[in-house]
Image (cartoon, rainbow, N blue to C red; front, side):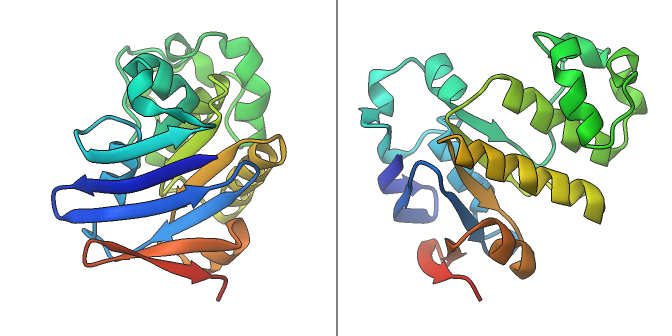
Length: 199
């Protein structure tokens, strides 16, 4: 379980939320409301006050790299640091079936990053994240650049991650996606979290 207590970052908070093992919780709110800030603060990418616990262990008892291996953050625009796709993966050949499942060309590992569309970058970013097998996923609009078929596969992969005992905090603008991926969630409004159920 991921537990956040008293999280404060810039204009946000204090925020409290829980994501149980096996559960996907949705987070929505207006553009600029701070959804990405919440994910980045939980991932320990930005300084924030408060307590964050995963599986009974506080974040401040772990090194930042260890925390980020267990709590995997996928930004809306994944970053890339070398030119060739495959060099961003520990084992591209092992990741290829998942990439193909997401509708990517099996030869994509040999491509340059510069030739990728925004949707291809988004899908490859998810594959890269899942390769590391984090216990908790923090996903920032992971289907924003995807068509309906690819969106369905992403949602299936998230469901499978949760069914295997992981958990996920899933940012979305889409009310129908909110209802598909989560039984409960939160709306971020004026720096506070408002609990929501399926509409």
